[in-house]
Each structure stands twice: as C-alpha cells, then as structure tokens.
Image 1: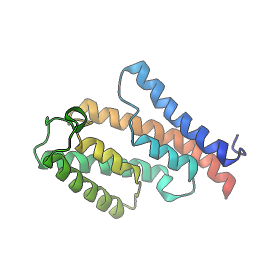
Image 2: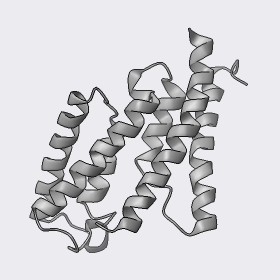
Image 3: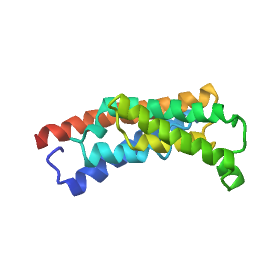
Image 4: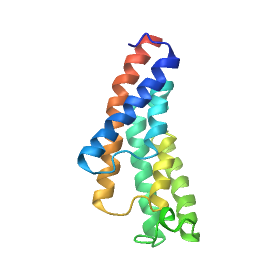
Length: 164
C-alpha cells in the first residue's frame, strides 16, 4: 500500500483518518470529529516528512492550542457566552479571545518546538464557542486528537520510510 502514488495515497490516508474518529463519534455520540482534524490528517498524509506532521508536534501543538484557547476565554470572561455558531456573528469578546489565543498558540509552539498549524483551528473552535469550558468538551477534543495523531503517525511513518 505504501507504494501507491501520492495522488492515491494522500487522499486515501486522510479519508481513513477522518473515518476512524467519525465512526467512533457515531457509535459513542461524542464529538470526536471536528474541523481542525482535517488539516492534521492532510499534513500527515501529504507531507509525512515535515516536522509539523510528527506525533510530538501534533500532540503538543494541539495541547498548546487548547490551553491558549481556554485561557483566552477565561481571561475575557466568555465562559458560557453564546457561540458564534449559534448567534451567527462574531462578538468583540470572541474576536479578542481569538486574537489572544492564536498569538499564544504560536508563541507556545515556537517555545516548545512543536509547530503544528492545524492547532490554530482548534484554538479558534474554542474561542468562537464551538467547544465550551467543560470537561466533556476538553475530553472530546483530546480523544479526537489522540485518535488522528496516533493513527496518522503510524501511516505517516510507513510513508516517510519509503521516501527516505
């Protein structure tokens, strides 16, 4: 399978990486499939040799994004505020939380040498109110990220070993 041309390999692998948390989400009723996992799968499938695609970068990058997102929400007192996905408009508070959180996400990733661009989308999902400051929401984020990170790492290494 790893000898497949990239035009087949990358779409197939990214689809598999969306299918696994998607099916698990259907079975459990939890939100283990969310938008920032798509770009993570894309990196792992399309650019397996990039540092940004590695397991460390994926896990730590998203962790930094989660912490930054919730920190900004707490700092600005937005916990429990309406989600932009419900009210269909960006509030001043949500805008500033997003600015602060993405800034903190990038700074934290640089300090930890864990650059992973898709984590900025995770950050925005939090600051825009897609995920609230509840343990169940944090758990949903963590499980979705862990599924894609570990499955993606296996497939990424398979592909990367061929290109070395």
